[in-house]
View 1 (cartoon, rainbow, N blue to C red):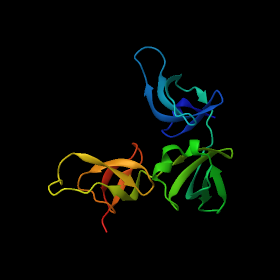
View 2 (tube, rainbow, N blue to C red):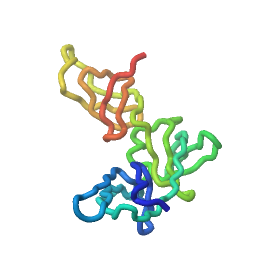
View 3 (cartoon, rainbow, N blue to C red):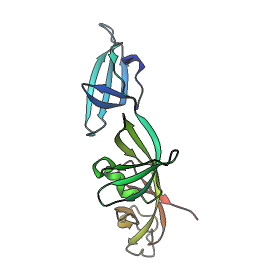
View 4 (cartoon, rainbow, N blue to C red):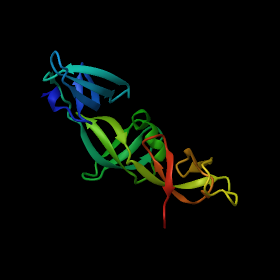
Length: 188
């Protein structure tokens, strides 16, 4: 148990039998009346966001979420198989829990797998990954500094928008937090 005064971003709360992650919080001390805590919570399982206000000092139940580094091994046709890099224990995770992360995972990609009481909650990728462009239309001379983009298929099979100067076979850095936007070329 903790109080609303102990809240931190990323903390997971157990509210009415559901797990909610604290996205942001703000302690408010109005001129009149008691202080309160305004929070933005995200449901760990469904991804739904809600705003919730608590009285300052109210007790809230915290959930223990174990975040460990796992290495993605393979997709067995129905589930994704990951290996704990510390204990070499393997777990299977359903495609629903992996979600969009599958678009950016290659074999041996390190990810964070969050569990609560042995149940997998979600799979979290690093902020960016480096992937090779398998196919894109060839660039044209002069397509270097414009803000225009073209579609490119990555080695995972996922398609993103890249600048016109990106060529097939190049390795690029992709932002995994916003649905896969191009960040930069990878040197060397």
